[in-house]
Length: 393
Image 1: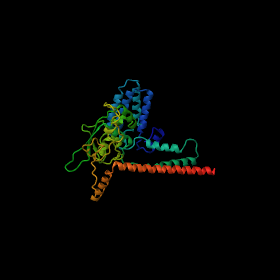
Image 2: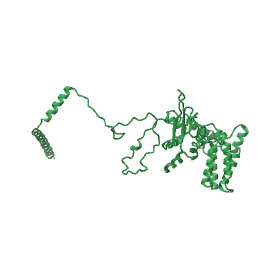
Image 3: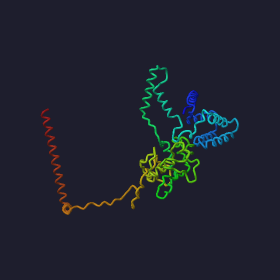
């Protein structure tokens, strides 16, 4: 996989004639976008062209030829010499017909493998940091290359042999989960053998105004989301949780999709990149209950949780008679004391009750007299100290 470099392409074709040179999908898409911006293609026509390109990217080997011919026929329908017509002609000549740049489809790479040169670009970034531009002696160049090698090894990057759910895919899953887009049903067992197959029905997601920006930041491509629903059967996708397999176009390219994550979380089956133990948050119906004084609903009545409820056993039912789920009335019964202790405590409390008001007043007067005596003694000691200081002066 490489960029559109003619020298490297000629070297690879000459020395390795059986080698298939793949084009980076990111650079293909970026060049098409730049060319459409230069021609000032209308945004509606540009969106339709990009949708066709994504269909060609996610197509299987048997579907690609028909989809390519269908896209070419549709693009020929644009008016001559219009920006859309010029842009589609450029795409047909450079990205579909040219043998140097037409190998960028997903079926040319194994499922789950990268289709961009981003890993190579990350290493080139390390080289640029450790090897600054400008003239350098051969010794300095070798030392800089060795420093870049050591810096790359210190990253401790390991090769992953299985498809792992990325943060972007998990963000898309939880967003669709909160919208109720998934309906997961386990297929019935065959006699006594439980099946690991699930039928996942995926409904389209209707985004609110505030969530469109979230999707643009996390998912980055509406067409990638569309590939999870395109061609869905009437009963939904068939998912195997043991082999982590799904028949949707998105899973065929990336090796993992939201349809695999949903039954794995429901059945508590381990899935690479999916955390089964997430933090629990306060229930939505108990948040902002005291802040809203009116009965009209507002946008702040619910809390959008960035994580889903933790998978595990169902919560226990609420206690009858409690006002709400977070308040419980416990009937505390003190332990029975010994007979001797109970009799002594009863006598002491009875003696306290027999004290009359006259006795209380006598006790109070005695305490006041003692306090006055202490105050007089303090005054006398202060006068004695003051007189001694005057004599010394």
